[in-house]
Image (cartoon, rainbow, N blue to C red):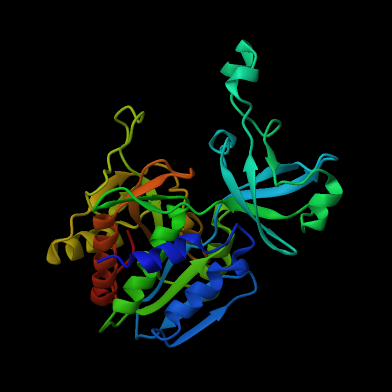
Length: 345
């Protein structure tokens, strides 16, 4: 059963890329500290939680950063002009709220939308872009905005908006990748007997270049690396190219970024514990922390464990609670069953 209170807490904790220390880092430490042998924060900001074992050494990573925005100009009328931190589509910001983290605490702003009554016919066909996005924080001047604590460099993120659509479906900003971070935390708590030497990593700055996983994997030097990240679920407009579906269970990739021995072992575990495992073809790098873990030092046997979501990188990312439950179950058993193996493809 998904702990919705904890999931919501994990999803809504602040943490734009590079600013994970604003909230989510402390949440992860608090949730894991009593369930691991040691826990620490490295110089880049990764939270690394170690459950000791005789081997093999495995790093399982879920990134804790969020996409967001950064103020790059405050005009004389007090409007904020912003630039993206990570992959933000400016079209998703129109008529939305943004939560900012200023020198004087949290403040909200809204991205205005010109009413249709005031638009020229030709303007109605234009999509918003970064040149037209401005944020109204209620100030009437640059001086008033600065008095509120806004500065060039102030960061913001999509405002919290967690909702339950029905018995099984939820929608909220930042399921990418907080839903997998939640699943990793719950799997770590549920873990019982294991031989594997396990490093749970809440990685930083994935959305701006897989940076946290790069330094963490170098320090840990794992034999096996598992990235836990969301993937695309079937949705309106996918034209049949997307295979995973909501409610179909966790997803694991096949392709060059995936070690075939680890992938075959995952299938064995899924079959033994009756976990439906959806398959995703990934002929190119997966776009997850597995990319950088795979080429760490002399090489790491990597795989990707995903929870499917709809509407990625928007304020209405949607997931199925059954998929989350099954992902926790699978991750737990995968780690408990893991033994030394020949990892050469």
